[in-house]
Image (cartoon, rainbow, N blue to C red):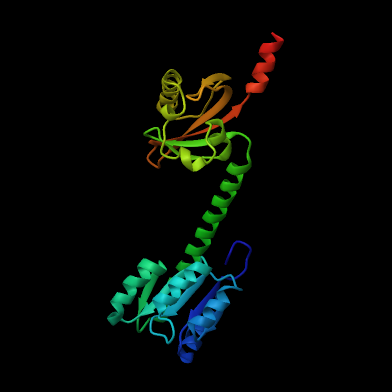
Length: 260
């Protein structure tokens, strides 16, 4: 079952009708089963249906199973399973490389093995969709939040920044920041100061919020920022990276200084 209670959909593609009937009878208790006797018709189905698992036979007229799964990958994020004979090892290699199949079953397949494989494949698809949705949410958050968000690895290189962070650093495209370090954007004195603070965060292994601080960039700009930094931990507790959220408060600080 999916999270909303609906049964996952399985698409079975085989040019032999009795195979389709056998698989439908085996799977229909737990899945909504769609079938197609041709790869071309199956591709049409994928354009209108949300499918969780695709099962394709290797030897079919028109498109072979590995060719079909490669095309199916362009239309659907469904988990792909190939049914193949032992003599089709080259096709299996092609399916792994181009179709990126989840697994394969050898002919003649065992009913219990097939059913367990499809259940696991459907669970895999559900988890991958959740990961994709989380990633899309993170992308939307990072691209639209006004604060600068950045990630740096243990070597100090930027691995991801949002548009606000790139703009703060004086760069139009966030991609231009990836792989660079603070030395590419800040004056050396500021870098040394920031590094000392971050070493303390890594040592303690907990987030830290800095007060408002003046930052001098290589391009001559002077900005005032308030930054919260946190370590990104591996499963064994080691710090793999740092994530930071910086708020540019330059206008506020300039107003305060003018008032003083």
